[in-house]
Image (cartoon, rainbow, N blue to C red; front, side, top):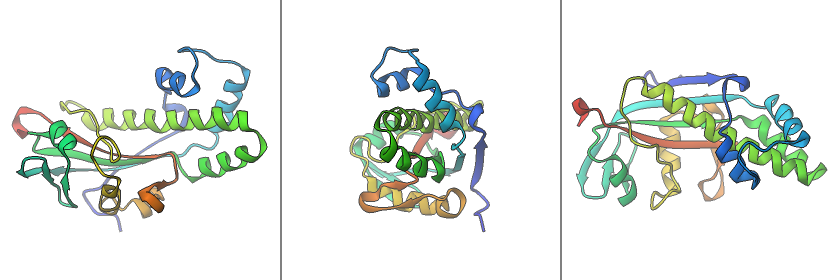
Length: 201
């Protein structure tokens, strides 16, 4: 049963606009560039996407410098501390594009390296764009810090395990952890976003 303080955000594939700047970087093209293959790959990928997010809003404590205390873990990270402090609350969330995308990419890797490269870039951009979409949904009228993910700076990927368990991500999102704390489905993201409104600081 879903924990009562976990909230969900789902979106249809056509609700999420892909970030053109990030896509250009991943495809190593000029911003806004497109061709028939990119259009075709995007159309086919859209049929595989299943955007889901689970999130919580919880207190953050700072027992000492560069140490953060959440209800699911104590985290030692100078970079996350710098990003969040002195926020007293944070959103903790996970998003995924769904397992069908992984299966589709696995097929393309065998049948067409060109389509695989383009679709992989599109899918990574889709995951990040959905992450931005849900961050905006959670914020509403709140002022928040930039989202920060495990694996960035000195924030260890080992944080993935307690974070995903707290979000009941296996049951709600179908996200599991493999070797090296990497997530499956691959096009999934976890993040922490501090809430910096004055009344919370």
